[in-house]
Image (cartoon, rainbow, N blue to C red; front, side, top):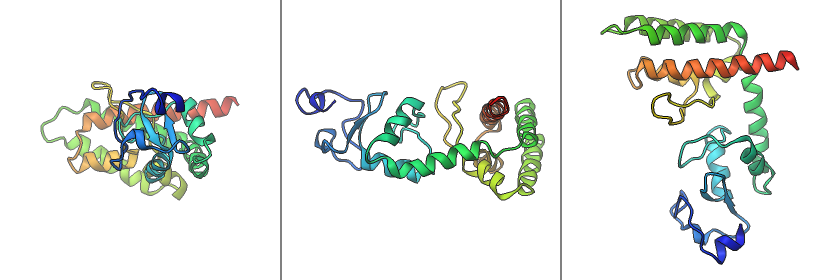
Length: 202
């Protein structure tokens, strides 16, 4: 990796890191390349992941890192501060009860089926879901409001960058269309259901 970087001037997807410095100026001790061929200063990458609540997402492409590269980041000498956040994210994904997952599935179906001009059915469903979330234990509310799930827009393939709580609030505020939020919540509920089922088998 270092030979290609320092001697062969290998090309990467990015010429600069997020703070504007050039890739070629990244010190050897901080230099890191992910599988999508982005070059990073590990210090900058760690700070970006911490700022995103421990979500292991490429800050430039917005794509989720695979488990292989999550492990590589965590085992890097400069990646150790992320370990606690990674554990917290894993714990949050297991903190959503089945009843809540079913509420998410119903919400996703309602939003997708609504083709009305005033979107009242969608707005009503979103409001009812947020009221339901307000009755949940704090840890479960935190899971819905903080955890980002590995989901992609079914039409564009672009990774979604919000939590369930933020998605519903944004849709209610007309910042994101209800059908897009339906797509995300459906995938998030599938992820959570699969996680619960794998835990029960284990």
